[in-house]
Structure formats: C-alpha cells, structure tokens
Length: 260
Image (cartoon, rainbow, N blue to C red; front, side):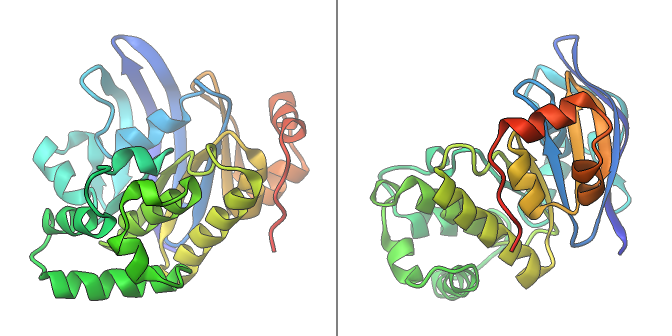
C-alpha cells in the first residue's frame, strides 16, 4: 500500500512548552493507525497539527508532516482550509457539541458541504441518505430531519462520522470518538468506523486512551507518554509482546474489545 501520511521528527509547542517531542510514524492508504496514551500525552495534539487546529498558541517547531507530497505545516491557512473536509476529515470527541441545537442535522450537513462544493439540496440529500445507509443507519431520512437534541449521545457520535465522510476524505482523524460512550455504544461506533474503511478505503488515524479499542481496530499502534513515543509498530506485535512497562500498564487498566 502507498504511503499517504508521514510524520518526521515532529516537535510541537504551546507557548514555548514542548508538548510533542521527536515523533515519527507513517500511515499507508486504507490503514488504521491507533495513537494511545493517557491524558496529556500529546496524542490529540499530533492530529490537530496536521489539520492546522493547534490554535494561536500551538506551533510545529521542528520536523515535517507530509500528506500526498505536501508538507502540511508549510501551507497557508487558506490552503489547509481547502484540504480540511475533502482530503482530511475529523471526528471530534463529542460530536453533539459541534451541532447547533436549533437547526436540523440535514441543514447543518448541507451548509458544511456547500463550503467546499456547489451542490443542490436534492443532490446533497441523495448523497447523504446513501452514505447513512452504507454506514448502518436504517432510517436516514429521520436522522436528517431530526434536531441534535432528539438524538442520543451515541447517535450524535455516529452522525459525526457521517458528517466527516460526506466529502469522502482520504484520511479520517478521530479524536477520542468513543470515550464519552458506554461500552455497548462504543462497540457500535467501532464497527461503523471499520465499515467506513471497508466501504470507502479510508485511512483512519484514531486517538484514544483505550487500548482495547486499538486492539479491535488498528493495524498499527503508536504508544505515547509525556509527548514522546514509547512503542510503535504492528498492533498484534506491540500488544502481544509489549517491550515497555507503560504499554503493559495500559493494557491491564482498561477493558478490551475483541476484533470480530
């Protein structure tokens, strides 16, 4: 598989504090990379850097983040904005908080699409319904016509996946997409993300503190602590033969989801 995303010796700082230190990894087309570690380990910072979402205090101070031959930290704000959505999608930790409560889900998804392409409401609705069907929604029409508060937390998170996939990005960044959900809904979200990869060939970079989710989903895993790489490699190899005590501690601390 061809390489699509590559981090080379990346340092990231916030107001001079180094949050990420000398991190390198690659992700191939259609691959799922899991980034795991405790809170504050720098894992979310890594994916936000690729999408230009570090905020005014954040800065990539060393290294390169390559996407299809482009070094993302070198791009202008306008250039990175054009990539976000059609090329790089994002699922946030709490998708429900990103929706306006007084507008329907369909209206908000349509508005986000028109930021990147000209499309009629009829064309949008047909595309949205087909996508919702592909990722397991039996009644997409009801979802589009609903207000966010009419959906459960799990449903909101699943709609967040659909929203990120509407423009069919090559890479989907997922920032703790299951952490606010109970175990049964976590399993459903994991299955839908795997279905996204199967249906669209999407590359996924998954950030989580739950190594059980990594075991259920990821082809490769990057274990982080205090902004640094602890272990990196094929998921089965790392989880079955963890070299570092920190990785073994993570594995013993959380319930695990088995791959089916």
